[in-house]
Image 1 (cartoon, helix red, strand yellow):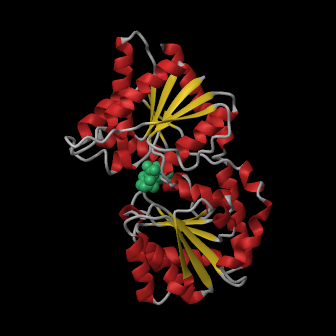
Image 2 (cartoon, rainbow, N blue to C red):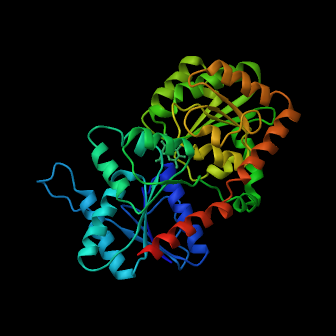
Image 3 (cartoon, helix red, strand yellow):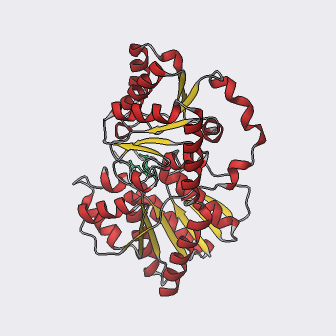
Length: 376
Ligand code: GMT
């Protein structure tokens, strides 16, 4: 198939899922066209089936806001015609589903019919899309999609609760590529850069937005390091990062915390991590937790949104009510104190992650694409 993927090119989960999906489709012989405003961070263009088309928005002083949706829908029209794209897959409803629908309409005018698959990722429904200023446009473009998928049952439920959706929503969970975790032999040698052999390594990865409850990450770690030798790896960047650095200073633990900023070395960091923290206010899925589990890292998370669909209580880690940092720290120590317990949780985390192997998930998308194309 010839597939166009529209996504955000940043470190955010929706962009990562879209990119990894496109790359796997390309490995399976499909022709994949990424259409977005800059090259996706996880995209390496060393595959003849992978194409990247940049959306440019010319600056014009009249516009207070540059019209990205317009440029994107025009680009989609051109690329569909030029490369004979058979299916559009847009990730994150805002504004991608809206721009995709406009492109479909323009193409229809020229006698070209193309199906659109929309994947809902989380904040496009629960935080941003739900805002009254966007809601009618988001409802409209979801209802106008030919196929709608969501990354968890919890997000599907939220979508029906928050919007007037008449379409069936298919749950296709996020995935990881497990094979790559055995391929880098250099990985084991770098642990000493981060911690002493006696110290446990604890990691948090996110976009450092309010929804991630960054102060809770620090509070949990503070309680852990009072009991056992440990270091905290803070990976990512966003509006809450500076406050987090100050909080560490205030608590006198700055020397035990490394702030990496955005990193392309996530696999390396996770490969020596003992425990992952994700105490989010809400999380439709929690891809970062799954990526950790794929490196045999147990997870301490909140129990909000779709997290319980990924992190299994008492198996791959523990889940607590949002904000209950005491219980989260207690559970973390339960896992970390004894080597044998930690090993068991590590093995379990990997076993749970295997359920989300891309090999199991890719056919679900391929099947939906094929059915959608057939209908046209
Ligand atoms: O806030 C984020 O984590 C970024 C956001 C995104 O759109 O990239 O993540 C959402 O989509 C991810 C991929 O499907 C999910 O794993 C995250 O749980 C979801 N974030 C939230 O729901 C807060």
